[in-house]
Amino acid sequence: MHSVIQKLADCFGVKLSDRNCGDGYVFDGKSIAIQGLKWIDSEEINSQFIDKMISISLTDHDLLHEIAHYVCADLCQRDLPEYGLGGIPMFNNIYVEEVVDYSEQCIQECMVQLLCVHWGKAYGISPRLTHDPKYTITNSWDQYLMAKLLERHVPNNELCLWTALIRLRERGLLSYLPV
Image (tube, rainbow, N blue to C red; front, side, top):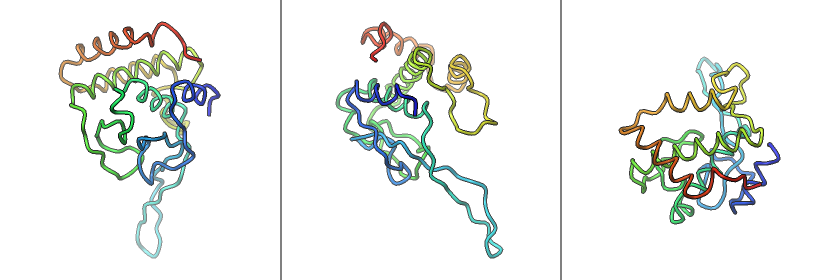
């Protein structure tokens, strides 16, 4: 784990926990898990193909992203699993009830991605979304930002992006580095 990750978590008062989010949530309303599960190739056992999962450390990007979610979430969201954003789980099989409306979810996700780029570039944190060296889509923060802009399939994408930038600026999150 990059040394700044823990410093950012401490600065904003969110705990990083040495637990596996495959057993629950990445953010469980109390802490951010630093371990996850990864599917590996099926293995043939007794003429049946069995999918296997292994425990992996979350990437520096994953942890930076979760800390940014904590920072960008409204105070009332900070004690909710996955910040009340709902959605399809990436590291586990637990569905999270959505309590934040879709428009707000999109704005917060834009804020998080922009904050990741800001902090990632400033602190030299890797933008890589996986530990797999064959995955090269996000070898730089500029590539990451382009990939995130291209993946956005939300109504009023430009409005969402501008709202996110304005909120980050109003909160002073772009004008200083916290650690």
